[in-house]
Amino acid sequence: MAKCVTCGERKGNRLCQAVNGNICSLCCGSKRQKEIVCVPSCDFLKRGTEYQTDRDITRKINEDLHAESEDVFNRDDVVPFVMSIERFFVDRFYADREVNDTHILQSMSRLYAFLSGTLPALEPQNGTEKLIFNEFAEVDRKTRHLPGVLKARVVLRIIKSIRSSSGGVLGNRNYLEMIYSQNTGKGKWVDLFTKLASED
Image 1 (cartoon, helix red, strand yellow):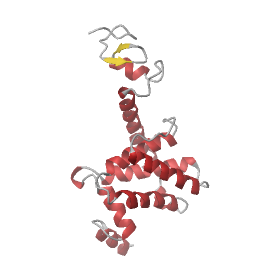
Image 2: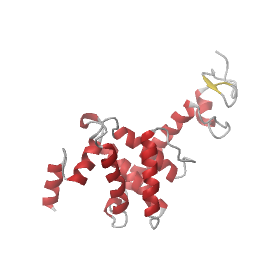
Image 3: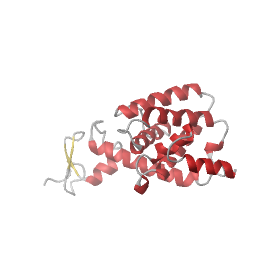
Image 4: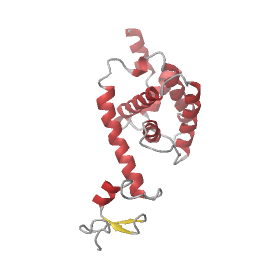
C-alpha cells in the first residue's frame, strides 16, 4: 500500500478526492476542512462530522444542561416553541412506523449543529430531515422574539430527552411514545403522567 500523500509516513488507506490520492486516517481526521478542502460528498467527511457533532452535543449537555438550576423546558417563554415542535413529531411521525427516535435524533443533532454554528448550511439528507427542518423554519419564524441561543438550548434539551428515553430495552420509539402520551392523553406513558400530575 502506498504512503499517505500528505505526511509521507503512514499508509494511505483512504482515497481522498480533494488531494487526488490516498491519505492516512490521522491526516484525514486532523486536516479535514482545515488544510484539506474536502469534497462535500466524501463519506469520511460525513461520518467525521457526525461523530464530532455527537461529541460536542454530549459535552454541551453535560456542561450546560446539568449546570442549569431550572430546566429550560419550564420557562414560560419557550413552552410554545417546544410544544409546537413536539406536537409536530406526534402528528407527523407517531403513526408512521418507518420513522423512529433515531431518525428524529439525527435530524435534531444536525439542526443543533447548524444553530450552534458548526454546520454551515442546513440541507436535509432525507425525507424526515426535510420535514423537520421545514417545520423548524416555520416555528422559528413564529417565535422571532426568542433569541437564537435560547432556541439552540431548547433543541439541545430535546436531544437530551430523546437520548434519555429511547433505545436499549425501552425501544427506539419510546420518545415518540412519551410525547404522544403527553400531547394526547393516550398511549403507553399516560398512566405515568396521570400519576405525576396527581402528585403535584
